[in-house]
Image 1 (cartoon, helix red, strand yellow):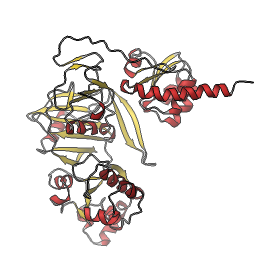
Image 2: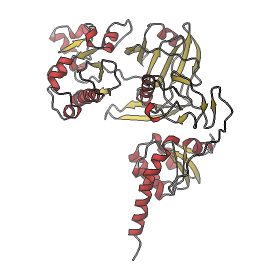
Image 3: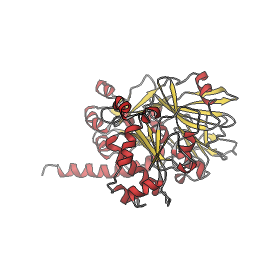
Image 4: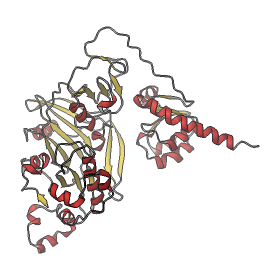
Length: 454
């Protein structure tokens, strides 16, 4: 069975119960109960769940009505038919109601309902749990902004433009506010921000890097929002209204926005040596003592795991440099050298690559800039460009080019090698890129040898 908003009980999961008992505006939702999921899948094996062909009869009917208000949904069939246009084009989010870090699905339409539900349930069982969960299916608000209010001695608010995917993944820096006694006492807008939106025609996600994004909300708006609840909550914003999509028990101990400490604990040492330093966030199993990341927020997945595993971490420390001393430490040698690369392609960290390019230098981060380029030296930021269009663009451009990448795409790397470009990558991923580049360069050499005239 499914249980609708307004009738949620504690046994329907912490998240659903908290949502149903807040005075804030909450998009319509229903809960798929554990008994219903057990009847649908009849297995706890993640692989079998993914390969199943479940009958979602009642769930599909509920999905058709999630875009309606409760008043319309309870009305006569004739009244419901008058708003029939809302029935089949709703987009929903799907997530587990219990406290978990299993996958969630956003922007799910009618055709993707079955696949999304299977993904969420299978991800939940991959964590080794035994009981079937409650699943929240909630009307999706296509947001202008996504964010969270985290309560503490000083309330903390973080916001990103568009969907919150980049924040959750630790790939961007949010706009931040710190409040004391209900008033904003500190604020920070990032130098750049990764905006993720959904293409309404294809349903695909689109990414765009925003330079010097605008401050999302006035201080008075943030103060009013934070005062509406004594619990932490996540929200979306659209057309002048805030909608709460999650209510949680998070509590922060943040003192400053300069270095956002997302997981408590002492952090002392030298960035890049005693303390691991990365561009994007990392899960706690990938660092020994502590982590400083130049991106990420308090509500990112890696921040959640850092708190769970009691690994101290600082995120969104945009300006921390390698060799910088953090905290009160004894005098140390702070020289930090990277390992020599084992590939022919010039491979350096993104920070090193960008250091030589100021605002008056050639910095290319759009296809328009690529095809307008007529200089000899440039840094080409490939992180925001789709690989399908980037491959032919790299064949077009010539010069002393440093290509910035954060994921080792072999086809793109092949073009980098062919054109004798250099490469800038996140420092913590240099070894990964070296391994992939070695394969790409070997293939390039073999192809050249095969094509030599006899």
